Amino acid sequence: MANERTYLAWVRTGITVMALGFVVAKFGIIIRELVPNAPSTSYHFSSATGIVLVVAGGFLQLMALRSFLRNKKSIESGDFLPSSVGVIAAGIIILLIAVLLIAYLIISL
Image 1 (tube, rainbow, N blue to C red):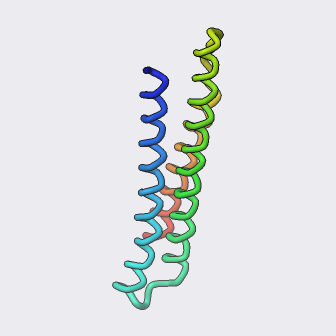
Image 2 (image 1 turned 30 degrees about the vertical axis):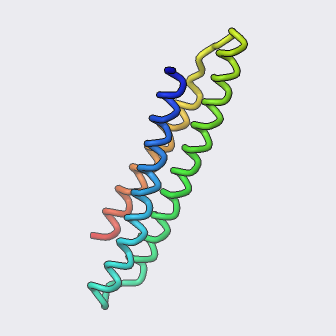
């Protein structure tokens, strides 16, 4: 049961990152509509950032599925050894997302 709960937690995280990417990408359209003289780089960067976030969320989904299937196989065979590679990779992805969003906020000021 813990394997399923962990998998679902990763799924929620991936969905959240993808939703954030969607919102950031659409924010560029809002900027373009509300501020007609805004530099085009502001909404192009928003779209690019949103796309990167959606891709990162999808990657988190793939990592979660891979980890779930590997753990399930290990549990069923009785030789489960926990691995921290997925957690470290996800932490690095989340850190990169944070840096990307900070850069976006600084550039869009």
